[in-house]
Amino acid sequence: MAATTELPALETFGTTAVLFVMATEQEYGAHLKARFRPLITGVGPVEAAAATAAALAGLAHAGQRPDLIFSLGSAGSRRLDHAAIYQLSSVAYRDIDASAFGFAKGVTPFLDEPAILEIPYRLPDIAAASLSTGGTVISGAAYDGIEADMVDMESFAVLRAGRRFGVPMIGLRGISDGRAELTGFHDWTEYLHILDEKLAAAIDAFGREAEAGRFRL
Image (tube, rainbow, N blue to C red; front, side):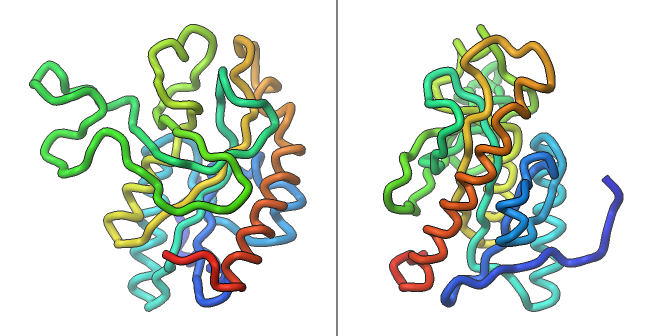
């Protein structure tokens, strides 16, 4: 992804300025395009952290710091309903393991943060589920070692970047895969058009809550 100095767009709902963040253009379908323009970070925790931190730094420098980061996209799950939408209840970083030095798995050494970061904000009528972020696509038996309900490759990184700038995050994920062993790229993209429509409906619901003053940070 080429570097850019253009600031990402912020969307305002009521009094809340929101930075929408997504990993890929593939997840950003026609229904979402009709509602907002997100920061597209690229795939994986490194790209997500770098892009989100750079965007927040640029916005802060311009006096446009958002009130909220809204992370959107797809996720894998072996136990949740496929093509369904879930909001994040918590996020963990499954790649970090300094247990050989006596740190609990999932805890970043010398960082005053627990292994699982709770997301306290909720939207009505959308089921909440825990999420694990890491740099590997999870399939089949790889789910055996993951306690979280669903997996992705960016949310923890986006959340941590936001916390460095004092900006809270909420997130929605649509389940795209995980029920069966992955056989190729098409297993991820098969439901993205359905998730696009459902995520857009959830954004409309968020907008109604925020405009009515019922969503508070």
